[in-house]
Image (tube, rainbow, N blue to C red; front, top):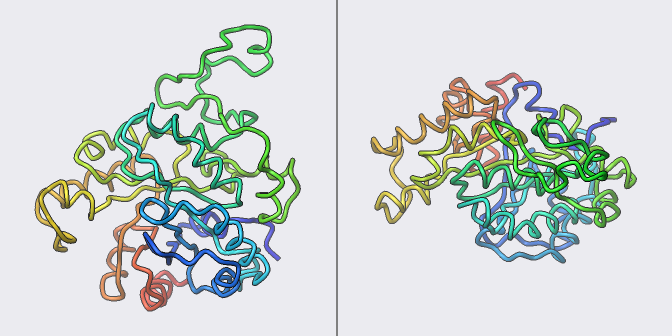
Length: 312
């Protein structure tokens, strides 16, 4: 029986691709659907709340169904569940003001969150900080005092980091009981293990960002250098809208889109992040050879071909 919680982290540690299923809107969040989806072929389930309903009652029931329908074939309690948060990562202030969304999502027991339309490094830092308990200090700017020192008034208001660091975590106590129940662990252990991987090698939380605007592409090197992120994607749909395409841009991409993909992919490689991209059974082998490691598309046949290619 596995001792880890998040199957996707197991796979990424071994440089294996992960395959997801799910919708940007309309995912059925009921207990019964959770029981059915507990046997999914996919490594993780994407729950779209950027455009779908922000349904915390439904999410809680769905996760409870996943638990009761499990364990998975790999021996994990549930498939990994990643939620697309509604807030856009356009700037730091916007993310901090909407950090309650991350607390609500994680409090139900989700294993990851993706921040849409990330456009600045400050927004990415605020995202990571909002998802962390302040007990975790990996990647925190050493210029920020230790918790005990802050108790005695040593720069107690300093939270903003410099360089490629993050500030002190801002997630508070209160949801560890409900989330820990989904993860199958007690409250103290949940607080220890719910921390972003790979920043925390023992962490079980998977955080990602979508780079899907010209501003985000321009700033992607700084955004993807923020500690605490596990993966990133080029959002071709929204980026295409910014470039004048009403529908999905053609693939192979036109020059501007191709240049954006190359830039985001290179920044992922430079910072050790997995790159997410839509694939199909016809192109999956080439994408895997190129280094794509998070596979969108939601088709089991793609996963069958890809897993065989990777000898998984």
